[in-house]
Image 1 (cartoon, rainbow over the protein chains, first blue to last red):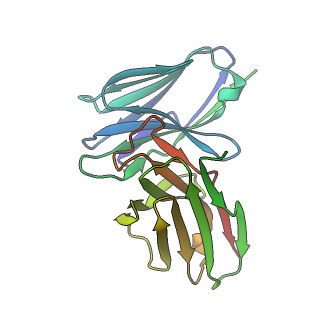
Image 2: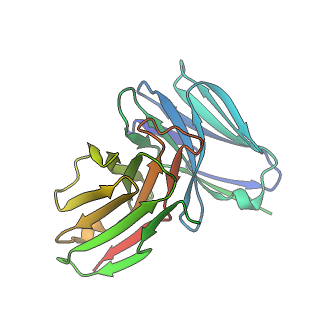
Length: 109
Length: 116
């Protein structure tokens, strides 16, 4: 079992819908990252969280440390949001990132 | 001006050959990484360097040898390439070992290696 689990694996939605992607992890962490991998392959860092909530444009990321769970929300989704969203965690005193398997999001116009 | 650039973007080579992938960052970051993404799109850390010093070496065959001539460069040399080495290799950098800084991790565009 992977230390970092994401759900759903695949998500297809209509333009304008509110999107939620979930990430659960089984180890203590010092930080959690959300990444976006575009269809062309490039990877962009979206958020780094250690507690609470962060917002950037239409993207919102939350984390609950006690429940070992994070969510990534996209409001007013758009076809350009179509990508693979990857959750990654970093443990205490451990500089490496452990990645989830990703959630493939497709937004239909 | 590309922040993390890696070359080449595509590499097709025969089994048994030796090849190198180069990575350079112009962000002034202290820490650089190599990640491997397999055919199922799963990312895994291979190496990390902080100020030219090897920090993480994750159970990678010793055919893979990273080299960091300075903190802006982290190259990956692979000896005796095998079919199973086919993957996309991503270079990344961060301000420090904690992956912090304004931009968190910054990734290169990837090198798709195909071993035939």
